[in-house]
Image 1 (cartoon, helix red, strand yellow):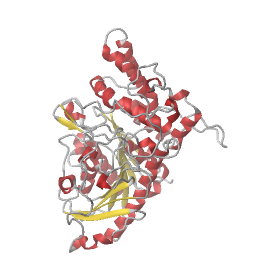
Image 2 (cartoon, rainbow, N blue to C red):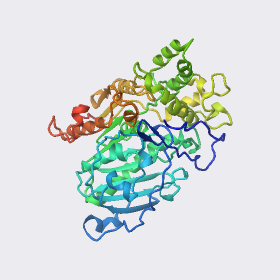
Image 3 (cartoon, one colour):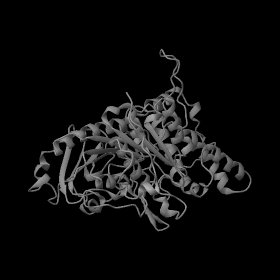
Image 4 (cartoon, rainbow, N blue to C red):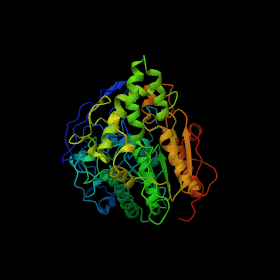
Amino acid sequence: MLARLFRHRPAARRRPGPPPAAARSAAGSGLVLLAAGLLLVPAAAAQPPPAGGDGRGGGTGGPCARVDRLTVPGAAHQQADCLPELTTAGTVASGHTVPADWAGLTAADAPAPSGVPGIQIDGYFPDTSRTNGHHGWDHDAQFVIRLPDRWNGGLVVSGAPGVRAQYANDRALGDHVLSRGYAFASTDKGNTGAAFFRDGRRPGDAVAEWNRRVTQLTRAARAVVTQRYLRPPERTLAAGLSNGGYLVRWQLENRPWLYDGGIDWEGTLWRSAARRGGHGGGHATGPGPNLFTFLPPALRAYPVYAAGGAGADEAHAALRETGFPAGSEFLWPFHYDHYWDVTQRIYREEFDPGFDGEREAGTPFCAPGTPACDTDYAYAERPREVHRAVDRIGLTGRIGRPLISFHGTLDVLLPISESSDVYAEMVREAGRGDLHRYHRVEGGTHVDGLVDVFPGRLRPLEPCFRSALAALEQRLSGQAGGRDGAGGAAARCPIGAPRAAGPH
């Protein structure tokens, strides 16, 4: 099993500087998971060779002849390289990805396409935080843009899941879309690591930056695509998982004109406060559910359940009532050890830093009754400014472009009944249900890496992404069927397309 990654954290308030190092790895049931938590810290890794070294840039003919003329608008630094392989089948060896960024997110048998030559641009936009050490740059707002030689006219843009860095989507999303001919761009969202909350000047700033960085990269990547192929992209799609799925939802709600559609893989739910009555009347406190409404009850109930004896049945019932489904019990020990506690503490610190006074991100695995203990956190009782911080980055359901969402029924980090089920209803209540297709995937969990840890008990969700992309392509092309390009994924995870977009 994984080592207990986050039992100890220094007690400090928001101060500049990188987060503590978090390199950890261990084997479990034959699978090596490097900090597998999507909402947790990215695993540290051997850095890629400095961009531009080893004679990888430039070229003498074809698209490589123009590689040095590509300019990413707004970038403070960039390095373009012409590569024989843009997928992880080549970028691992060439040093153009960081496997630890995506460790644990896919199952061992996930397809690994190859045969995609093209141009990769690494760089960063201006930023003041320095949590991302990739390339030795020690600079946040890093991005990667990949431009295949054989382009299908499309662009897929993503933000990293969890608090990982820009290469985190390379296996789960990037390899497939590149093999389909899309240009692909991904951002580190402007801050990374378990101390991401140190970025910004007020509660919620770090997460708000995530949305700005995706918008920024989308605009820049569209310009670079136009430079490279001498025409703008015919379609631009947003795609992401977990926190990346939240980013897709936010973009389609707030910047729909930049996109033609999106794919939301188990997006995190931050719900905007309800405003009712019109004429500016009444600002309600931010409603749940969110991480802060289901993680503290889980942290209180699980130790009692795990201990057995008196109270175990009641604790089990409490976990079920909180949203963790029947049949998911085998996943609870792992998630208690590696997900629930640290996720609650670091996100609570982002939105409610005053809860624990001068401590930073609370006390790991504190017992109920401990002063300022996240196990006892009661979101509904927190001051109005805490709810306003969540509301500032919250979702409304008012999407303006077609969206396909899918979520596993055995997700015990973001329980489906407390997250995507709720978002689907929000979209319907906002009158945008005709733009949305939502799929509950039986047996899916939060990270596909656990499929290998628990053989025969879980279903991978990566085929659902391939199927969703095919369905969205058909919708945007006005097709009712035909070759889906999902590589057999449609049979493993059939997903239908949303209907056409109306006025917005």
